[in-house]
Amino acid sequence: MDKGVNMERKIGFSWLLLPLSVLIFLSFALFIERSGITYTVSHKPSNFLVPLSPASISSSLNKDTTDADTLVLKYSDSLIKKASLDTITAVLDSMKTPYSTLDIGNAENIDLENYGTVVITFVELLKIDAYLPTMMDWVENGGKLLFAIRPDNSAALLKIAPHLGIKNLEEGYIQPVGVEFLSELLPGTAGVQFGLDYLNHSSLPVSLKDSSKLHLISADGNGEPILWETSYGKGKIVFINSDQFIDKSSRGLIGAAYSLLQDVIIYPVINASVFYIDDFPAPVPEGKDELIFNQFNRDIKSFYLNVWWPDMQEIKEKYNLALSSVIIETYDHILHPPFVYNVKQDKIFQYFGALVLRDGGEIGLHGYNHIPFCKEADQKNQVLGYPTWDTTADMQKSLQELQHFSTSMLPGQPFSVYVPVSNMLCDEARSWMPEVLPDLRIIASVYLPDANVPAYVQEFEEAEDGIIEFPRITAGYNPSNFMKWAAANEIMLHYTAGHFIHPDDVLDSYRSEGKTWVDLRETLDEYLLWLYSSMPDVRNLTSSEGAMAVQRFARLNPEYDCDNTGCSVSLDGFYDEGWMLMRTEKTPVSISAGAFSEVMNDLYLIEATVPNFDIQFEVQQ
Image (tube, rainbow, N blue to C red; front, side, top):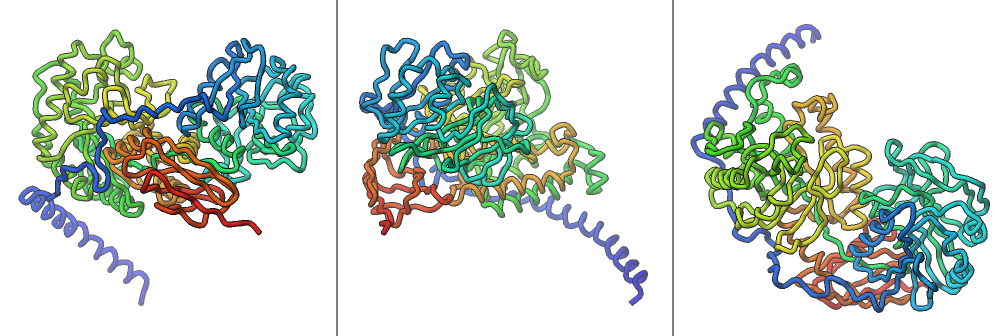
């Protein structure tokens, strides 16, 4: 057949498709308007978890450190100040590892006799020069030593360098950039490079002995040693040759370094992945966006209905996501009553909201308008160009209007989740929010601080007022290398992921980095493929379900006794389930109750169904 004729027929057929598509869409829209989307409201926030009463928080949240096996050495006058120490203690607290701390600036002696592991959190090694020979003897006899930050290049270091797996130590310092993983120290990282634009190390110029096992090198092409482990006598040493891993985003790496010292380590995790859509449902902008119209021949509303949402549904199905969205009623900067009920786009709110609920998702509250709850004196809204609220009463009334609007649009749906606008929430508003929203159980802001945004930064925890703090970790359709770094660290530390997007990122050339929706969808899909490949068997949960998982994580304290044949595990604070990670080079073959699965070669995800159980290892012949 003639190609020209064939092309003409194809073109003719495509012209028929356009009016047909419009007709189908109009019919579908009319059907939605007349019949609505049906959804089922469950009065249980989860099919498999129930909320725990704040009054039942276990008194065993903080382990008694009198029997601690780990000693954290700190130096109050260190040039690094508290950053390194705070990161280490936060990691050990999260891993429910009891520890004692000793300030070497005030210590008359360093007694290692009662400890199995020592962590050095300062750079001034000369301050403990007199104790280093004793410390090396202690390692040789079976002790475990972690240098959590590279020490100063001094005579003190030079004396013990051969015991640290170092073959040669030159004078001064080098400035390597980035890291490349030679092993899967963190899940999903083997062979991956991070930090060429944010990890600028101050490191020691070293070459290593062949017996040293190197896990991290610089990513700048020079392959400088950044993290390694080595044996010394019966003991083990892990050495971090960098001053960069002292912030919150690197906690998982510190936890992984600590875990390398132990024959077996078991610690509680959350095991939850939560996917948020902020500003959704929200008013859909009128008119056309030039980039979208040129690409899809649609105005903004038609793009959301016929392109963006179907694509998001496809991604949801591919990765079995449980969507958690949060409502914005209006984008008008209305800061004083009356806060008018928005009826202009109620059908679009009902349509998208009902679809989220129909598919097992959850809807929370974001804001009546898109103005963070801060006053002028707080000096926070001004940072991002937002106006400020005049009175507490105005903020509270706007929130009450949002609650009224949301329950009217989606009857029967409980609204227990609040996500702060632009992740900003001032202290005063945080204190009264549970009173204004009696159903509020969860606040979901962000995990990592941002130098450019005065955000409400959270830990995974239960607050004193009973609110569950459940931060999000990463964001956007095109997560940066830094976000991927943060995600990998949180997989290792908490086995959790919290990601959020905004529908209108597509309309903003800055937030979309100039990429088309086709590009953004592709990069989001690539990120999620890496994420779920890195954390097999993770549970996709709604925000409320994730928060209930945080409750169980926060209260769980594992104690375990291991030998070459297995481990006996006892869980203090166990309620109805417990999730843990176990790192060991031994091979588990059975568990007396519950289940386990392999995350990577030496890391296992354990599900506990009873508070006491045994794990058996493969017996080495």
